[in-house]
Image (cartoon, rainbow, N blue to C red; front, side):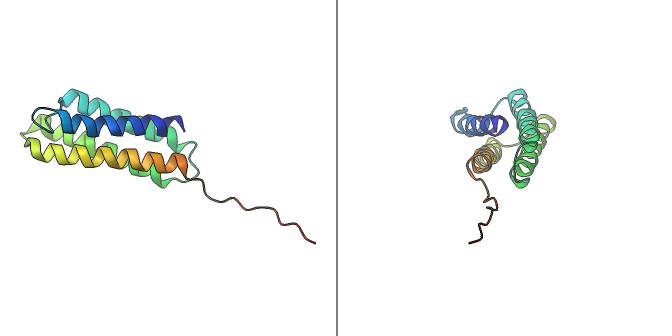
Amino acid sequence: MIGNLLNILLGLWLAYSAIFAHPAGDMNIAALAAGAVAVIAFAAWARRTDPMGWPSGTNLVLGTVLLVVAAARWAVYAPPLLSFWVLLLVGIAIAIVAMWSMLYRPDTPRSRVST
């Protein structure tokens, strides 16, 4: 649960950083790589306690996408507009999926009382 809470905050920070960077999407590569590693670590931590596996698995994939974007921006020039959309959408998706995992609890079977 704590891993999901941290991923919510981290996803919102990624979206905020994408919007308010100057120019938009031109985030520091080291901060982007650190954020990607943190998303992966928090998703792996949340995976141990989640009743469903898909939210943390999705955040693991999204963290890997951020790591690939950081490596691509380090290796070659990536236009800030492309980075803006990737960071914004991935950040929002991380926050939404982590929040879903925190708030949604599947129904547990109740014991039946025979009369």
